[in-house]
Length: 333
Image 1: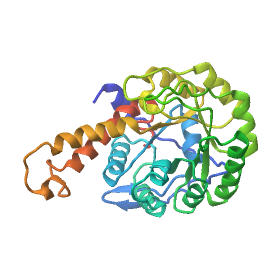
Image 2: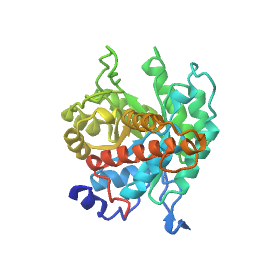
Image 3: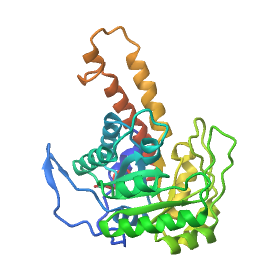
Image 4: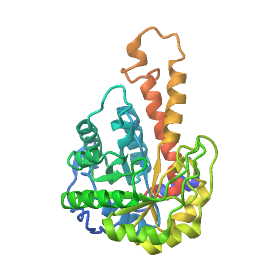
């Protein structure tokens, strides 16, 4: 462990709590003992974002896709004493091309149980989903942050109207809404995306009441190799115009120095997914490359040869490696 990471983990956590139109103050004393540590219920997104902006750090959303990957994210947050947002990709779990359907209620129940047993401040997102019906369902299934995204070919007016409807449904239930203006390029394709325009971002926030805004400012979705910089003046301009916490998707492919420079400009949340799956796959493939004949040793017993334990540890280490640039280590006290 580097001296820098040790120092960040020792930082005191936030002492104040904020109130937003999609959240409520986290009440004091709502903790209960669990396995020798204190745990806390799901923390409002408004509180997580306000504390991040005031503290000069960003909260990482580290996307899970299974129980062991989710456990690895929680392991890292608790080890690093860092506030965290956990959750699942709504588009991956609901799109029509799935061989078998997933159940949003199961995802919400799993995420809520993980958050409620976590000893650091934790939010829960149903991330990036084009299905209006699925996002509506997620609002009632335990998530406290949802993110509708435009469907292919959807007009800006239609997306804004859907986001407004979802915000009106979500806010009375203590659920925040993240939305996007601009489109990220994809690392594996020819799509160049489109940068966020500050004036369009401001108008969208006024019209929809969205609580967080994901921006396109040089970041790239699913960048499999390398890192890229960010358009820092654009990020500053969008923050000044829109006046809401900003989100960077494609965290795996963002250069650490660029990320550190973007956080004081209003970036309060950064999304990671690709790098976590890459780390998990490397570890699981290596763990399965054995002649061990007992399937229980390889899956389920939790010993050193268990492939899912290998994946969980790999996710934990991948998350910890990214938290230093976010500045969130040690912020949970």
